[in-house]
Image 1 (cartoon, rainbow, N blue to C red):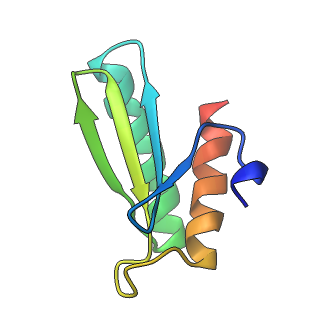
Image 2 (cartoon, rainbow, N blue to C red; image 1 turned 180 degrees about the vertical axis):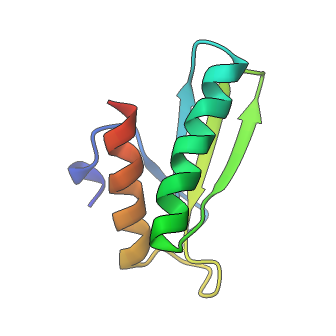
Length: 84
């Protein structure tokens, strides 16, 4: 399923993981807000971290099961679309 995603997603510690560098801090915040809109609609929420002021790290997994489920792949696909 990683092959179906357009960006450099990886599987780390039973989670889908993507690190994406943005132009600046506000671009990271804007991206977080876009992801938040998707997550709310899907009722499925990723972990989001800003590192070094312009790198957004995204972890997607099903918290209740502590593993990747179909819902995680769907969320990653939706996030992938806004990164293009």
